[in-house]
Image (cartoon, rainbow, N blue to C red; front, top):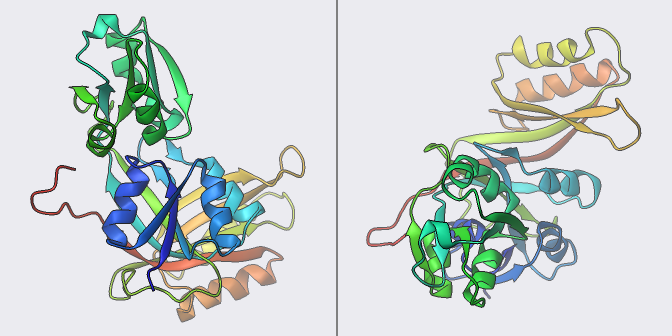
Length: 289
């Protein structure tokens, strides 16, 4: 029986690229929003979901982390990093000065801010649920409008690429999490022979001088490399935050367990979101992506 994978759709999104790279040939279902993708796994409509979590230019995708922590409890079982190439797409060949509006996901618009500011100052930018949905919408319009998306979107919806690589920075990559329902087995596609990372969040007992330093020191003196730390609001009042962290260590490592014990002794709350392998996207020979 094929696995069912939910993703932020429709076809033509970077999330679909991530799904195809990790789960070729498996059954997929597209959803209009990231929470819907995650809900599909929580309600057992799908076995796994792939959702964007961080971009090198725009940083964390807040809705993914907030929904994962506050609304659903789905373990992270894998990560894949996809290179992002943003192109300007239109239904027909247009000169840049003819374009009246540009549609895309808010992150994609932000990633292309300089291009839009300098090359399309007359065009209004409109946020869409995804780059794929923006491309699909533009394909159905007769007005002189464009979308920001990838080659897959251009192919799926029959659009013309007016200009390639319009993102502001060449080193543009996005991390995607693979989430599973708690009863699902880890699929073979995820693998176990790769470098692993653990994502967690820590809540401090109270705000006092040196509190965060004590937390970081628990990792530092054990020489556990922390690749990311970010504060997020607890949504309980102004000034109340918890800290999301990524560390290059497995959760069952004895050093990590020592961190847990030390932080508990300090009165902190530590929750592991997942300990998982890291995948890098590999372009297939002959592929157009």
